[in-house]
Amino acid sequence: MAAGGSSWMDYLNMYHDLAYLKLDEALMLEEVGRHNADFLLPPFHKAVKSNNFSKVSDILEKGTYDINKQLPEGSTALHLAVDGNQLKMVKLLVEKKANLNLRRMEGFTPLHLAVQHKRLAISLFLIRNGAEVNAMDDLKWTPLHNVAYNGFSLQVLRELIAKGSNVNARTKEGRNALHLAAEHNFVEVVKILIENKIDIHCKCDRNWTPLHSAAYDGSLKVVQILLDHGATIDAKTVKLTTPLHFAVTNNHLEVVKFLLKRNADINAQDHTFWSPLNFAVDTGNKEMVLLLLKHGVNCNPEKFDRTGNPLQTSISKGNEGIMELLVQYGAKVNVSLGQGPTPLHIAILYRQLPAVKCLIKYGAYYDAKLSILNEKPIDIAKNFKKIEIVKYFDLIANFFEAIKQNKITDVAKYLMEGAPVNCKSVEFKTALIFACQKGYSDIVDVLLNHNADVNLTDEDNISALHYASQIGNYTIVGSLLNNGAMFDLVSKSDNATPLSYALLSGHKDIIDLLKLIEDIFEDVKNGKLSLIKKLEEIKTKNKVWFNILDNVCNKENKNLVEFCYSCNNINLCQSLKE
Image 1 (cartoon, rainbow, N blue to C red):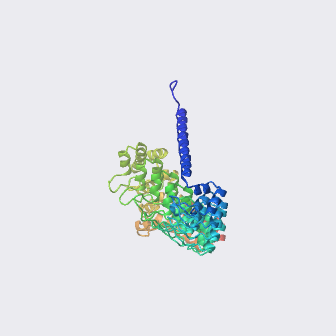
Image 2: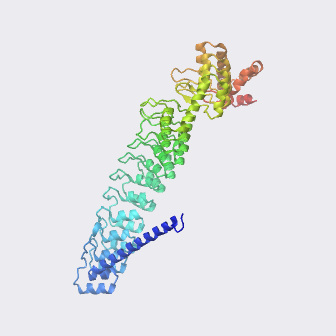
Image 3: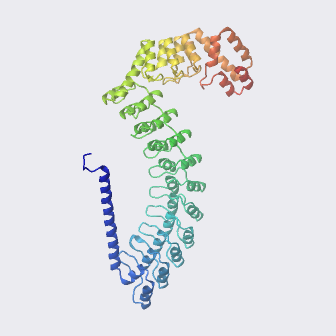
């Protein structure tokens, strides 16, 4: 900065000085206004407000002044005495027949003011001396509503009820005292109201129940009490919002845990088709999202609004941690928003390369077309000049092309450069499936050495082992089984296993191997101890098959020993381990 110039700190100090000057002016004007207002008060009211007890007594003794005279805004001398917390003055005025129930502006009686300002002694005195306990202000609040709202005195609450205060009186918005106490976590107030038969199911104009209020503000103990007394756990507001929605939205984790423990509907949808999971994702609360997922929330709702399902929301918010959680718990990565974008398209539109990589990792089709535009993700990335994403898609395209051309060196090269080994393609399915279809055994080995998921399937639940069995490539079948392929995985459309495919194609060596595996697992299931001798013979005659039996898995992803334990065949398990 040039010499003699002002720094940003100078400007900040000037700003503060100006702000304090304006504040001083405002306080001065307020004080002047108060002084002028006091100056304009009638002598009697002025004496009350200044707590001049002797002067007030003298005026009242003369009997020439109307003790209930109201100022232009409606205040009586009694209102002023209550405002000033002048118990002795209040008693004098009441003794001299001041009207306890006149209303000032906003409809407040002296008792309203006493409980609003938490004047304990004055509140009790007014209640005991005939103040109308059911008086309503302009918003239809009674003194009981005020006590429930500020929770200042259980004694005042009890005395109001004892004097006939209507516990079920409703404010202008339709709330009762339980709504007000619940939202402020006044546990003892809630208990007293329930003891006195307040309606715990009361719905305000927006259909909020007291349970909604408690959940919204995170009042765990109140939530427990209300549910213990029969509150409807899945009550819905006019917008179809449940207490669980509110607790999730406002990040009240303990309340959410308790509601779930009491079997709240975890998949309830509001008027926009948002479930609690949508709100947890929208607020970015990863711990909340994980809690809901562990309790089985539906990641893939059939109905959702234009903002999308939870996965699409997490992408638009740029929250990679939540996005990965969702896909790990089964969120569909290829679902579209109507005829619109898939999660992958959305990730591109929001320039989220990490999201793109995550979606590809969990099975998003890198070449899926956007229905309404007939464009692939790479086309959209190019149109919006998202260079890093374009490079990533080019890498995947080159990777599949190298497999197509059976170029082992190039396949290995692209994997080293970061091509995702488990990426999916509409045209080629997975890299491993494509290599198996082509019968490229060397490329299959390269992919398996780079941790390709041997059990990744296409949309029909057909795996690489199905395809290898179909084309009769014994070498590839052996490689897949040795890497934990599921021998009995069933396709969706025709309930076919890899053995079914081998039988149709008539590949005897593969049929014999798959039948042997099937028989061995069946023997384990039935606990046949003769299996041990059979395995010893296989080990002697065919070590390749024996190694396969040691690694192959069933459709539950259990190997032979794990399956044996799941069948509770302890003796057989020990023998197998040996």
